[in-house]
Image (cartoon, rainbow, N blue to C red; front, side):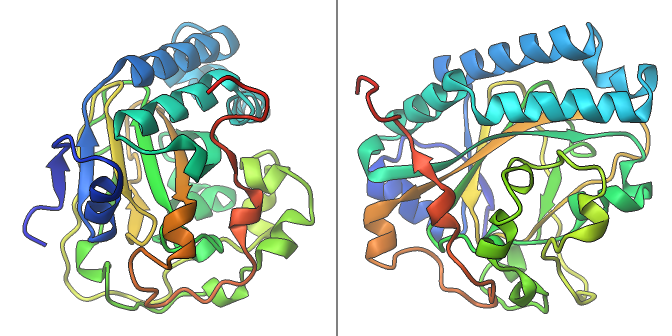
Length: 285
């Protein structure tokens, strides 16, 4: 893979998805839709966490910060504003939104020193998104809510895009995961979930390999295949990282078994059952 992260070159529809399925990561420039989503979410974050949200974990006690961040996660997951932005971003890439389902928007909050908290350990596991019973053609869209450096994002391990690695995805079943309610789907509504539940992870020490992290600015969107092995960067010192991500599946591609080959995913169940239409029923297309 000569150049992993490439600037979006106006590829559309099937060509857009085929490039992602091949392992290329695309950087999409800020757009009206992504900036509207970023502005809406940062406004709400400031209203809930205060005017300096990236340092809120230092101002609030741990329980209060977790509770407030959890409420924001639930709000964004259910947000019509975020759902509308997902539809617009798909349209910008020439995709038929009626042929797509999405796994709604999630707020990610990575705090300074969070990797030292055993309850937060799953945040830092190297993993593929497909290990969570997701389709091979699932695509992940990731957007920072503020300027981020390479020491604040996550890293790709591109040599393993089409190479198997040892992992414990065989213990993950989507039906069992969702039988416990919506909290696990939305993420981090329960402070003890990280100790109690199975979050699939890499289970081997990899030999020397490239790790490719990146920097980004608000409104930029990093788009990649759910097949990519990747890992959150630990923030040793500095401010909290705030970002959004969501996932999409093209139903035609899924039915045609398009997407990267499954090299090591053994999770069971079908997370597509939890995806929702990009355009809600009754909404104007």
